[in-house]
Image (cartoon, rainbow, N blue to C red; front, side, top):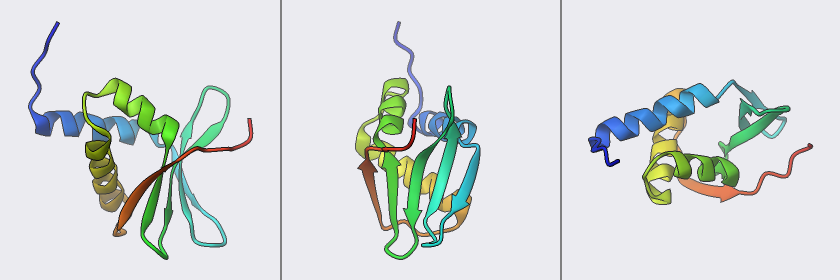
Length: 105
């Protein structure tokens, strides 16, 4: 089944999903901002932001989840996540990169 969705509505749906998946924020002693979600077993990091150089790090598994749920390219997802972050936390993002999260299980 094919359903046509206006681009602005699709972007809005992605942002609503991001809002729903985020449960909290934290900072460490280097002022890195971590954005957390609740997984099936424990809390994990979806994104991290370094205010010193303006890099927004996105968890590769989170990008894969978004890519599987929404028909948008990685570059569009980067733009959506950048805009979402800047609007929610009032920081300027200069670069968006992916990383493999290696947290505790």
